Image (cartoon, rainbow, N blue to C red; front, top):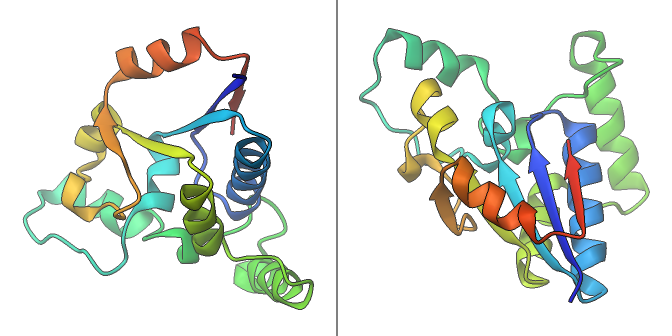
Length: 157
């Protein structure tokens, strides 16, 4: 079986869309697909309804600065004070393209596995209880290397 690993480092809308499109297509084609979310990419898999209160000052800064879930992502370019992101989301809706949150659910239905990288979570004050239920595992870099070692394709977003 062909294996694909995707490192999702960015928490930007356009990069998340690309990552989920590739992951889902590969899974539909029968590939074993693993997405590893790290640093800013962790914002994609934060659950907006699961906010934990006990955070120190630095953690509070990351909490406010990072997207709170897939629906809170911004474009990497052409932001225009949020207008560019709104335009892109409008175009996606007009062209019947799923939202990132819907893409995430669809990817899970296709068998894509989601891993959250533990050290960046600790550094940024993200607790496992703040993640969406689709996350299969919180892990370390060793787990990623294990997955990537046997992968036929390894992509970084």
